[in-house]
Image (cartoon, rainbow, N blue to C red; front, top):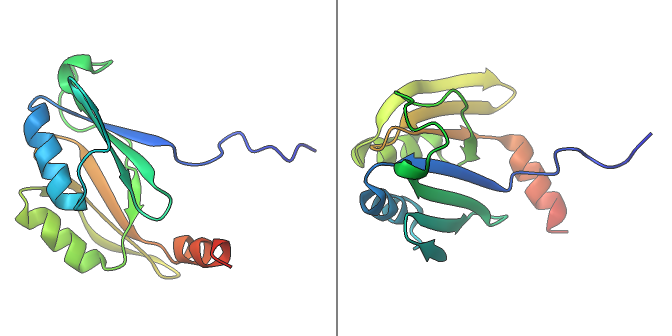
Amino acid sequence: MSTNNTLRGFATISYFAADHEAAKKWYTELTGVPPYFEMPGYAEFRIGDYQHELGIIDSKYSPNPNASGPGGVIMYWHVDDINTTLNKLLNMGATENEAITERGHGFVTASVIDPFGNILGIMYNPHYLEILEAKSK
């Protein structure tokens, strides 16, 4: 039996925006950090405990530029306070995609559509905190 994991962990999530500069500014305000890497049409942020990468890409580079509406995959970011984070997102111009939903065993999710048409999932995830605590020992 192999001990190698096929999927080793979250590396980068990419969000596309027709107004790249506005999206870069919006995500800078949301995350509280500026992009650590930029080139024309691309900005990349390092976020959170594991410095995960969030790429903001001009939608002209989208592999599916004719798609309409949000994509079908929701990537959830762990947050410590889901109510406060959801309210912040809504106050910043995001629209609710999925209301706060109790999933059982302490897991709670919600999602919004950012002002650029991307789905942004948020989640209170006790497992995330357990792993973070175990890694800090």
